[in-house]
Amino acid sequence: MNPYYMINQMQEFIVRYPWVCGSIGLIPLIIFGIFTAKLAHKKGYRGYFFTGFFFNIIGLIYVVGLPLAKDCVGRANVKPAVKEEKAIEA
Image 1 (spheres, helix red, strand yellow):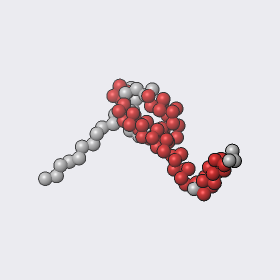
Image 2: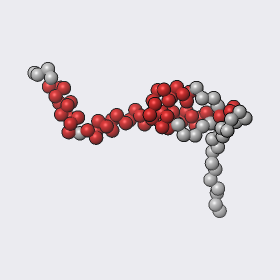
Image 3: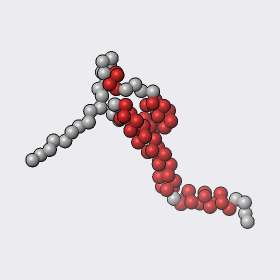
Image 4: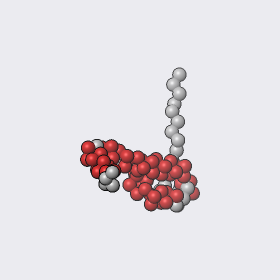
């Protein structure tokens, strides 16, 4: 058996189906983005999905280092995230 058979098969797959490889590459980026956004929301901030999406582990470390939003309200123009309640219509 040719020792380069597996490498040739992988190269052929990548050339034929580049969209599959791109989709598989986006999965960890999306997971980091969601995890970073959820952590920031728990701390009282909104957004931060793209911080985790583009900067991955560095963005996650940044969000971990953020202070709680309610602790910063008096010091800066930081507004804590408020849950919006939907009005019940009768």
